[in-house]
Image (tube, rainbow, N blue to C red; front, side):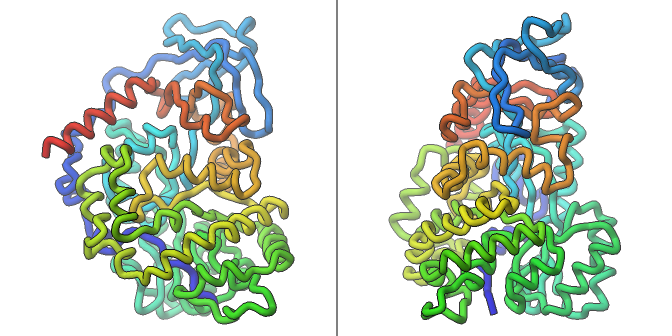
Length: 475
């Protein structure tokens, strides 16, 4: 049977409450730049801008886009659109306006990381291990009381026994599945996350209860199940290409039994024809895949880990998180892995990219996600690395960006609500200095971000990042 990679933030963080996270990180709500709730944002007008609607692969030149109350109200030729007299006018000449990005696989436990998403143009996230803290954050973000991306969140992971991570729900009796689903739905979580140790009976009961109660399952391939069984179950997503390596092993592979310790090496023995067949079955099942290629490329130990911690962007990460990522920290699971496993994880990348290309060729749904929260995978910053991985896998820049815009919204059953530039859509926007359809790296060249109707210029974003870095350095 297939054992998938158990990639999630180190377990001691799971017990953190909102208060303990804030105190440990040094980014208490009182320290952070407050959201302006007393003065509603004026209308915004992006004039003479090139629009990337992201529902199709086009650039619409010389447009004016008007935003009011956090929604796009008008899009049209700059010569024909009247700008409201109260609007903040933003010069779009030579610039490109696209929807804000979505990171579709995160583990966010530190309030500071919420701003790091926004500062990198990430306006929506899908949190994959939820707690009451995340429900509180979501409510405060939506009320304009704190700055952060729009937040979809799972409840606590639903695992078997013994659960891989403390804080998970251990579902061992299929008869208890319906009650667990009722509790998570009533609490306000957006979806269920099945995990590695579920039995086939409990996985089936969980999916059945979710269908009956109208809440979907998005998660891992349990060890007791093959990928095809999960595809047949109606699970909405498969994370980290779980089960793909085992399902596509070549006939002469030495890894016919694939587990956690051998999966990275098994990737080097996949058969291209079998990968294509698996991708076609994934497409037929309507299952979305969130590959998170970047996370295993951040696996590092010793001096390699120290080099990652020395990168310039680490200045913006809280001491709370950096402490958990120290190479010798007991909370850093990478320090406990055999070095051969870490090395083979890097070597698996070309073969994982083949799987992503096969999914694209089959027309299967692909989501942009990072597994942020794992060591050295930084909120916001890592998403731009993942975009480059998807392009290196064979996706066009448009396809890679669509995986974090229109396709992400479609996966969350929110087409038209966000992820595209269209009248009536949420004005979660990213203004760029160069066209990312020419080179996906241009998605880093921000002029500014609109979130919840508020315009953040690049100077505003940079100033807030530097303010936080100075506060961390002063401690």
